[in-house]
Image (tube, rainbow, N blue to C red; front, top):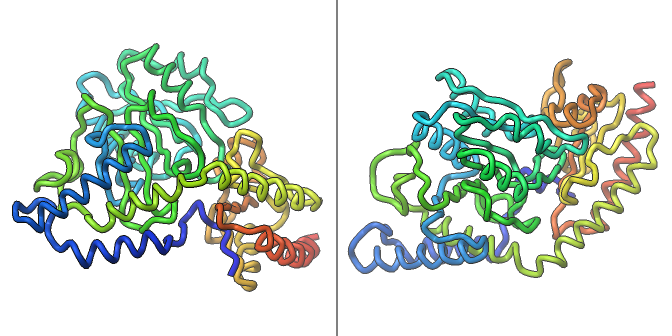
Length: 376
């Protein structure tokens, strides 16, 4: 099996799974219980939270555990909107966000909130001048992802955060799901940030919202003691400990892992460029972990399922074949509907090998010749 869809999900690291298993067996106490078993569980959560905060250079009390990034994004957006709507109902975002950003924003629009989309530069990054113009006295939130999940465009979050703070009283939320464990992140100028463990070889079902001091949120889930007043429910002891372990491992030998992925990306890009009908959509502003490309004239799901016959797994915008199925992110960047309708995504990790890419390329060559010939 050749797995090349790491931006969608990663296999669980064995050390992480072992950690979850041992904690789940040996620490049965509810972390909120007052007896000694509960206290031991609480101490373990506190130690894990401290480790996460140290790695990300934030305070332990700024961490809110959630079930995943989608919940964290909803909590950040709705939580700010409902708590600070007396200040205004204006929100700014980009055309390159995840559906878990657009979902709550669309919902808020039905309640009278106004959403503006900032203009983007040709390289997919935020147009700073336009952002300044959009910021108003009643702007309460700006939400911009760190890395686009389809193409891999990396936004200059530090610069964006400074602009927001210098020109408004708005809060700045960043979905950093595709960045954690892959690139260095500076959260200094970010008020809220979302991520999830299953993107860096952790277990599905645990995520996090970072919320800086003195920022208030209206909770999505009320009732019951937890690790924070902003998200009620029994703390996920085993999952929290396992996420802490996964995060620590992700940042070990960090430069070596990044450079390995960078070399794989360069090699893959060079090989794919040899094909006449291939268009590389990912550009220089993209992280190397994501390579988006289009095969002109071939439906992406057709090629995806062809590769699947050889147990090679990549991703596409849509799993179904419909005439209006296209990647909005690719269209926004390339301005080509042809490329948007035929885009595919390969996502790499530090455990990907060049040998795996050679197997993929061999299989790709076979199906490319077959499918392009059929569509002549």
